Amino acid sequence: MKPAVDVMSQDTPWSQLHTLMLPAYLETWLMVGIVMLFVVTLGGLLGIVLFNTSRRGLFPRPGINRTLSWIVNMGRSLPFLVLMAAIIPFTFWLTGTTIGIPAAVIPMVVAGTPFFARLLENALRELPSEVTAVGLVSGGSTWQIIVHAQLSEALPAIVAAIVLNVISMIEYSAIAGTIGAGGIGYLAVVYGYQRFDNHIMIATIVVLIATIQLVQFIGDRLVTALQHSKGSYAS
Image (cartoon, rainbow, N blue to C red; front, top):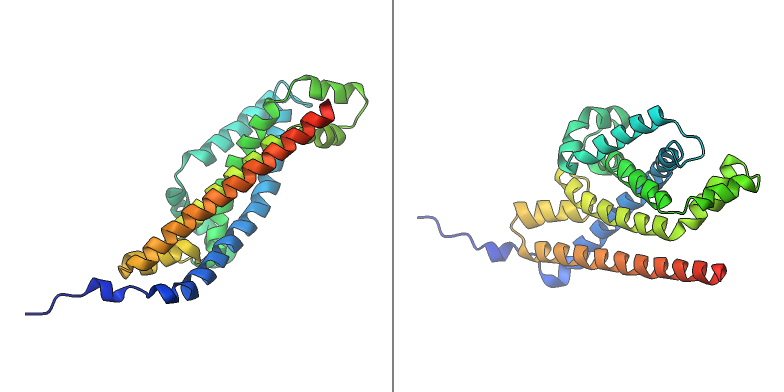
């Protein structure tokens, strides 16, 4: 009769956790940083076009608005794990691989872009209609009105949207660990789940919770500061 396996003996010693956790944590932020550069750029442009092709926008185009809105809704409707699997051929075509950070970045960008676009559109919708009207009356160009009137006035809400998107991308990066993308998620899957390493699993959960709490705290403080500065300027 074979002896029972001592699962606890497979746990990484607490004193050695940092040798695994620190590189994985840095890989997570590398993924999130790369993704957010694309998400804010592409999603920002898409959100601006979505708002300004609506009835309240600078260049109303109902047909274009409905089409873009449908594309955004479709992009937001799929769970990330399903989306990641569905676009594997596209990911491979772009990156030449289906594993690692490059393979994770593509589905994360595809998932994050429509999400941020909708958040930005909603932020612009919350602005009083007078914001755009004043820009038009003052003779500003389309670009000037978008940057100096719409985006400037909606800045606190836009920052809140970016914070929310960063948190979502941290969560997505953990899911991307299932395809060997690296980061905290990969550590949790390979060590915590496959090797039954309870210390790694506990550490990854604590680190993810602490990271998201810190990001949200910093984001809330920044949004509050922007709101106060705008209130002082308006008064």
